[in-house]
Amino acid sequence: MESITKSDWDRTASEYSELPRDGPLLIPCMRLLESMHSTLSFGSATTIIDIGGGPGTAVNLLIDNYGYEIPPQAQVIATDYSPAMVKATQSRIETEKTSDKKNATCWGQVQAMTVDAQDLSAFPSNSASHLMGSLVYFMLPDPPKGLQEAFRVLGAGGVFACTSWSQVQWMEFLNQAVQEVRRATGSELHSVDMRSVLKHWGDTAGVKEELESAGFRHVRSEYIEFDWHVEDPRAFALTICKSPNPGTQMVLGDLSDDKLDCVIEHYERILKEHGNVCKGVAVLGIGTK
Image 1 (cartoon, rainbow, N blue to C red):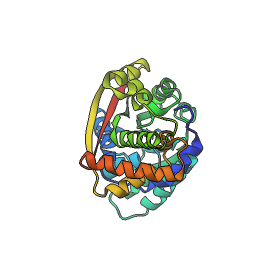
Image 2 (image 1 turned 30 degrees about the horizontal axis):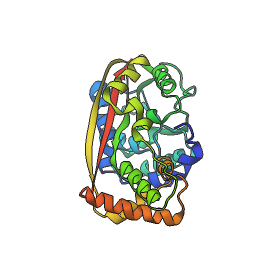
Image 3 (image 1 turned 90 degrees about the vertical axis):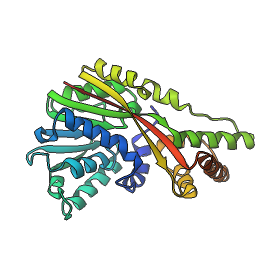
Image 4 (image 1 turned 90 degrees about the horizontal axis):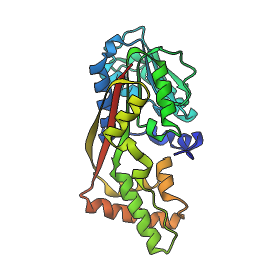
C-alpha cells in the first residue's frame, strides 16, 4: 500500500461522496460505532476523532444514530489524508447543520481536518475520549505507527476501534476478470493477491495482536459478515471496473480501454455466476486505554 498517494485518494473523493448513506458497505462502520458506544457511551464523549474518514461517512452515521447522546460541548473531528476528502466533509458539514434533519445541530460541533493517520501531532496526548478508523489502518504504510499515535492521543479510559477487510469478493471478481482478459489477449499476467495485501489484518487474531502491541487493553475482535445483493449487474460491473479507487487501479494495472471493456463483460458474467451476490467480511478490533 506504500505507493498510494494523497492524489490517488483525491481522485476518488467525488465517488465516495456519492455512495448511498445506507446499504451493505456501511455495515462494518455501524458495528464499529455500536461497539464503541457499548464500551464507552457517546454520552460521555469529550472529543471524538475519526481517522481516515473519507467524505465524512462514519461521522454521518455517528450523528444520525447517536447525535442525541453526544454532549453539546463535545468536539467531533473528522480527519483524512486527502484534501479533497476533507473538502467533501466540510461541504457535508455546511449542508447538514442547516438541514431540518434530527440531530442537525450536532453538525455544528464537527470540524474537518487534513491529517495523516501516522502523525497526529495536531492533537495533544490524552485528549480524545473516542477515536476510530473505519477501513484505514490496514492500508497505512506503517500501521503500528498509526496505532501508536492513536494510543497517545486517546485519554485514559477512552475507547479505540478500527475495521479492516478480511474478504472483499467484489474485488476478487475484478481480479479474476482481469486475469481472464490478460490470458485471452496474451497480455502479461498482473495478479493482486488480496491476502498478501491484507496480511494479518484479515483475521481476528492478527488485529487483536496489533492493538495489544500498541498498548490497548481489554482488546477484542470479531468478524462482520454481510452479503451485497446486486440489483443491476451491468451497472455494478461498470461502477467497480471504472472506479478511480486506488485498489481498483492496482488490480487493473496498465490495461487499455478496449481491454477494460472486456473486463467489464467478464465481471458481469462472474457476478451472475455467483447469483449477483458479493460476500464481504470485515474485522473489527476494539480496545481501551
